[in-house]
Amino acid sequence: MEIILKEDVINLGYKNDIVTVKSGYGRNYLIPTGKAVIASPSAKKMLSEELKQRAHKLEKIKKDAEELAAKLAGVSLTIATKVSSTGTIFGSVGSIQIAEELAKLGHEIDRKIIVVKDTVKEVGQYKATIKLHKEVSVEIPFEVVAEEA
Image (tube, rainbow, N blue to C red; front, side):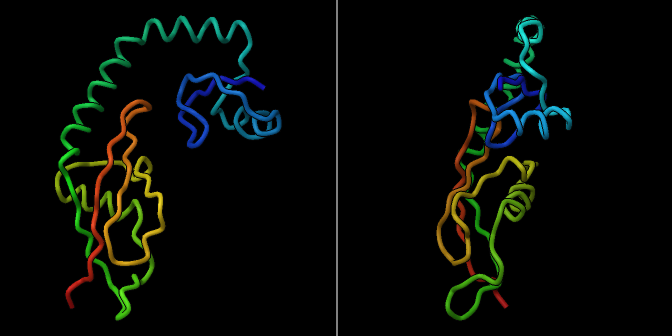
């Protein structure tokens, strides 16, 4: 089943993408929640016309994302957390802690666009990917250290 996404859906696509999904997923979840519409010929025509009109706006959004990526390129974070005597973290470090550390440095980043591939449960060096735009992402190295008592 071909559908047109009306908003970004993680692990599926971005707004205005035409994607193929299983019919149950489309009919039972995406369409009723307003995240997508069926990609009929008339809907595709309307989409192409809308994209032509919004091309310059999209270019500005991409340019802003590239500027933010350039600012974040040199950033590396150090996250202090409570650690056991064996070096294991109590809990884990995720996108929330990374977003908080970036906010302390003056970069307000939504935690939903921060992706940490590995589960961070030990002290060490890791990388997080920030997906600023569908074509622009930046990797942020971060180090997890023991919190001073």
